[in-house]
Every structure is written in structure tokens, then in C-alpha cells.
Amino acid sequence: MNFNNANYTTLWDKAGFEREFGRSFDNSRDSVYAMNGDASYDFMVSGVNFYPRAGNLVVAISGAHTGPFRVNYIVVLG
Image: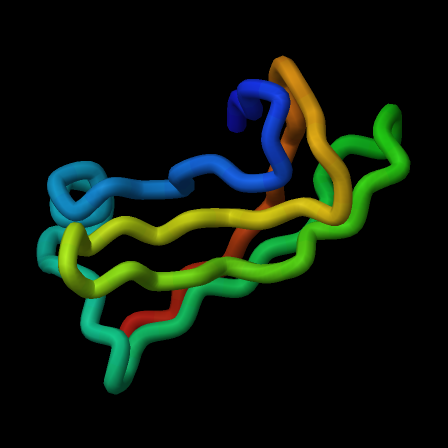
């Protein structure tokens, strides 16, 4: 993921999630879990938020960062 002096960035937009998983994200039955995958930085992944109007999934970290940051994730489709 690339952060631009912020503590959040888009993990997937609606079209990207559909390309990756074959359908849109369903907040009533799907889940996305994320964690820090980059030992070089002392940040904690705070969570993944879903914004239903745009269909975006956004990952948040515990501090502002600029540049790449590795995020490991698991997607559970219900």
C-alpha cells in the first residue's frame, strides 16, 4: 500500500474488489482482516473500514506515513 502523509489509504475501490473477487463486497456477510506486514515500521494496523456509498475498503494505521507500507490481509466471503 502507498500512504500519502496520512494514516489511511484505499485497500480496494469498488471496481478493484470486484475484479479481484468476482463480486462486490457485502458488508452483511463478508469480512476483511488486516495486520502490519512490514517489520521496518513500528505502526499498528488499526482496522479496515467499509464506506458503502463509494464501495471503498480503507485500511488505517496508527500513525501518519508517506510511501509504501506492507499490509497483510485476509478476505472472508460469506
